[in-house]
Image (cartoon, rainbow over all chains, first blue to last red):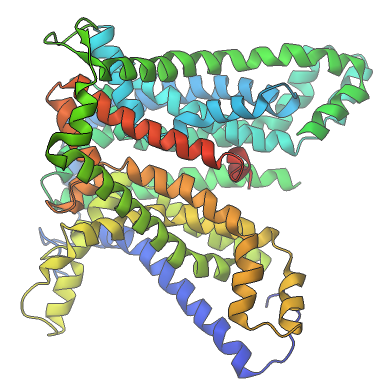
Length: 273
Length: 299
């Protein structure tokens, strides 16, 4: 089935055994990674209010409860507003920054790189607290969805840079040179040559940013006012322990996120052509 | 990178002239970073040296009292800080130990399978972080999956209560949350490894253990360093996991930090945060030659 990556020397069972053990180990690894998600999904359809064996009968009532939860619906709406604004902003700003980082060499470039990526490496709790100190005791602002968006853009910008930059590294610049030699203005070259070629990367970056921002908790935790976003709503429930309603919510989120990611993935794969 | 810019310069003088203009593209992101990241960090640092009865503003007098409190006050903050670092080290080591064979398994699969398996490793990481941590309370709790299963099969009649709300469950969840990074980083360096060296070592009579320690491991050290950046550092800043599954014995520095912020003790909170930020920055500067941050995501 697979082309051998090591030239096989002697096909004895002694050589097969480690491979078999390795495969078993890999299987266990995936069980570890997917068990929590599987538990949430299975018990979202189970009528028992607590997680117990054996399973009780099948029910959709936890999903119905979600539909009637107005606090949840409001939180989802806020999350969508925050995420859309952040995604658009971060995609524009991040794409603009990716070009010079890939295309030009300048002094201190490594340090600039490190500096621009710092917000995704520094733990979010520190960024969140620093922003809170700026917003409240220093500027005396009222915390709102605007302050949440400000915090999210800081986190999301570098992610777009990374995804778009990866696309630019594989970019054949001779195509641009050809367009310009044939008389296209730099602006025309950008719209007719560069932009179509990097578009899948930009869209993938936007989808990844969307997913991350929609789920972001810790910076939002410090920058949010009286409103709620979806992660903040979830946080208010999980602190009180296991609720089957949360299992239903989790299952919906899993399906939606995986859909978004598979789309982003297929967009990025297109570079292979 | 350098090669790319050289090509641009030589192909066409017009492309060459466009380069300085490109640098303007950095301006918006750099501005956002300065205004909403650097300046807040600077204010956080300033607040950590301020003592004030006023809640708002930077009025007050300069003091190092907050730092004295972090490093001495009956040892609690220092003790929890050290405990946090130790737990993060243990969790990172566990990620490496568990993740290394896993990455090896993926690197040894066929090309087609490799991309499928890698996608499968990353996918859980993208689905709701809070709910994935919460799921562990449903697995490890007294009425959780493991205890219910043990009772169902008659292995135990009392639930095993040591599974949840302690350092053990905390580390399990840390490993669960961050192992995808380890697997990806080690996979990336296994991919780049020169495999003929492995065969050469074996042909020259090295045992598998010798081959691993002297040929494979050194070549995958970049993956190990990357794990420090993407596993150890985020664990230091983990607040959700200790809060949801750590219980009393799993309290970490972030819990103390958030308590201070909620009590509006911005000065003292800022001091704790600044100590953490300094530690993280020093680590990053120390590792900046070993870890190429941008390359990690290009894969």
